[in-house]
Amino acid sequence: MLLIGCILWIVFVLRVASVRFFKNPTGSLFNPLFYINILALFYIILPLTLIPYTLTVVKWQISNQVFNQAVFLSFWYSFVFFGFYVASKDHDVRFCSFNASPDCVIVAKCLNVILCLLLSYIILFKVPLIIPLRGTRGEAYSAYQTLIEAPFKLRIIMFLHIGVMYYLFAKYRKFRWLLPLLLYLLIDYSHGGRIASVMCGLFFYTMLVLNNRKTYLKYAILVIFIMLSLGVIQRSSGSDTDMLWKLYSGIMEFTNTYLTTIFMCGHPDFHMDLSEYLMWIVSKLFPGGIIGKMTGTEGWYGEMLSNKIDLGFGLGGNIITEALVYGGFVGSILNPIFIGILCYWLNSMKGKTTYIGSYIIILFCLPMQENFRQYFWGYIFYPLQLAFFWGIWVCPDWGKNIYTYLKTCPHDFCRRNND
Image 1 (cartoon, rainbow, N blue to C red):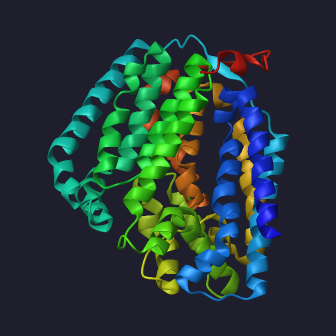
Image 2: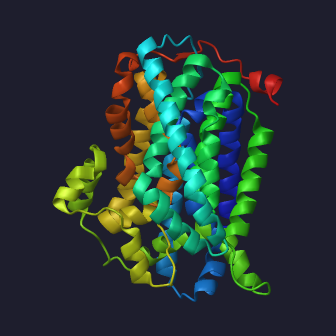
Image 3: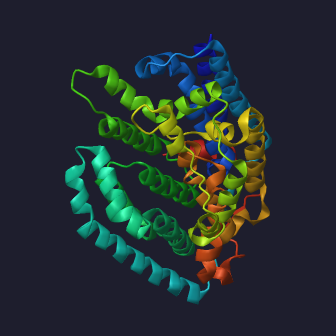
């Protein structure tokens, strides 16, 4: 019955989301609740259908009480998110004539050149040192962290560069300004990563849909299939005959993160300090997490939890686990309501059509998949930090509109114009 219920719920939510997407793709891509609902299906509903198999692989035994609590929380989160999604509106937007300031355009072009040169240096001198290690993904990722991520803070650079590319694309509406995304894909390929590739691909797809007002759904499905296939090939390990492990490796993206929820339902005594976590969240308003460093607080629960579970590999986490670790069962009940309220407000805020407002929405939506499988609130102020501390160069254009709301939305325009 649980399997049938999960499948029916997944089909129902995907059906509703797809109808709204075809009716209004631009509004869907700028609605955080659209992403939240899709990710909830894959990270907290789909794993329920794989629990018996997963527990067999990791050799866990759990009580019916623990299992039922996990099932309840999963459907509670998905139901709450869906409720907010149904209540929200997909505001149909299109690019308008962006009257960019000449000085800001010059600065943006200079920043684009500087960042592209930095990426070229990384590709020419750092990536060749990592590619030979791709046979062992753990070694390749460790080398990537040491040679690229730690010294260059590539994740931050990418978000900042997206702000520049976004500004120039809004000004000129030419896709050549998005070509630097290919450099990030090359760097991500060096260690078999997918997270940066997903964010770059999603950003490009969003700009493509907004610019041409077509869904390009066939191409999107093809790219998703290729990335999922590459993920299975890159992450699979073990001998050729060890099919059980290879199958598990292919789905561990969803099941491993959910194992942390199963563990927390059975170990309510494990927790971390909520006040320190709140302090760490606030520190994300400032460059370098200065408050967190001053107070010595740490917000990432995943490493400590993985060590506690001790399966010999990292598990990550998810938004249910995050709430259970810091707020217990009561916190886990309230958590999706707070998330829904925040996403609903972001979707309806008036400043979403301006450069700075839409940039914040983009920064919030692009890494949603990673936030879902790690922590949600720990990242929540990060887009504000990047927008206000990095975006000082574009302050004359902060309040200028780059989008306009359509007064009428022809519901069938996607079917007429779909590629």
